[in-house]
Amino acid sequence: MIVQVAYIATSKSRGGSSASLAGSPPVIPTDWTPVHRADGELVGWLAADGRPRLLTGAPLAAPVDDGIAQLRACGLAALDRRWWARLPGGPMTAVVDAENPDEDWTWQPVVLVESSPTGCTVRPEWPAPGETGRALLPVPVGDLLLAEPPPESPADVASEDGAA
Image (cartoon, rainbow, N blue to C red; front, top):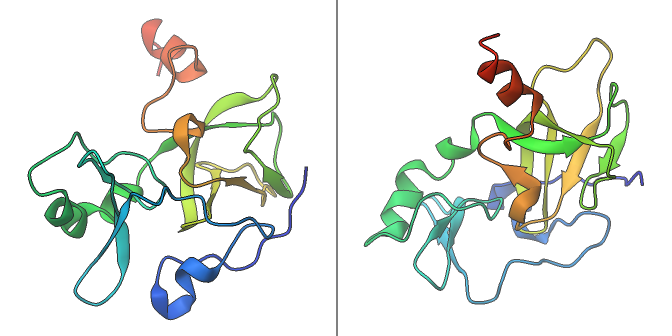
């Protein structure tokens, strides 16, 4: 399914939490506490169990004594990395709703493009020429966006064989 997207921002100065994907309501659990930097920038949430959560809803770390300080120190920086999401095969040239991936979609390395309390957007880490598509994921992302490749991913198979 192709979904049109309005601008999604992480900064309250750009509209932040009022933006939504395809008119969907916010889905952040009500018992999560928003965490902001001194300048008002939302940097993540503190879950009811004390676990700091990134803007995507992914855990930053195990529950710690001061998850708020940890989020303020490295919550935004932790988003700037390789992630893994299931995407359709072949170059993406449109916006794809990846909330319910098809069975034939594969785990691929992606980077986070935008995030808000209602959704996030990713793109392939190394897009093919002309590949301008994006994939939309809900927030919290659950198991739709992983920090490490799943065992069955091609990257893991290649590394087990000694290939790069």
